[in-house]
Image 1 (tube, rainbow, N blue to C red):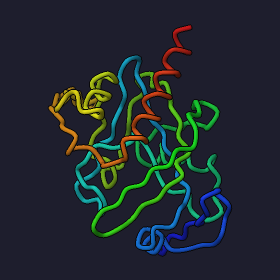
Image 2 (cartoon, helix red, strand yellow):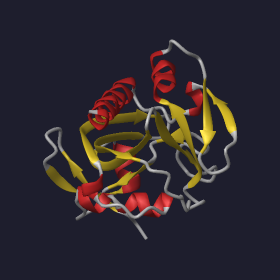
Image 3 (cartoon, rainbow, N blue to C red):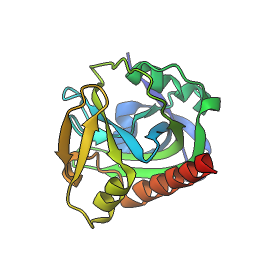
Length: 197
């Protein structure tokens, strides 16, 4: 079944529908849902399944996905249940903003307006869709920030599922642009501070 996505202009005004493959081929702007989960001073990353067509076996946003034709951001929350098995509502998430997330490879141009949220993870058990997600790991937010800004060449992650540790470099991350990472990390830091007030 072909998945259709609403394409938008640079002001996020809807201008039509296209298949997901055509959107990525042509580099059309479209809208996505991103949810980052934080656990006190740590951030959770998903390890994408090694069978994924795009960026297999790389670490990425805790849960994310495209908004298909006719969906709203509230519908995007389904990604959390589909990928991680947690039933959450949009009201349980803290909005960070809508960030531009542009990834260009040899085969596609993905230009997203990402509706980005953070969730205060409370130790809930994950039930992973293994066709999508191979693992969920936690990393110190400060270590991730140092990896992104280049002051550190590697960081240690710990699997939330198995407890195993693994050293990760920037090459192990989905190549989101630096400004996207910086906006997410700044938003997460603000959310942390508000939780501690």
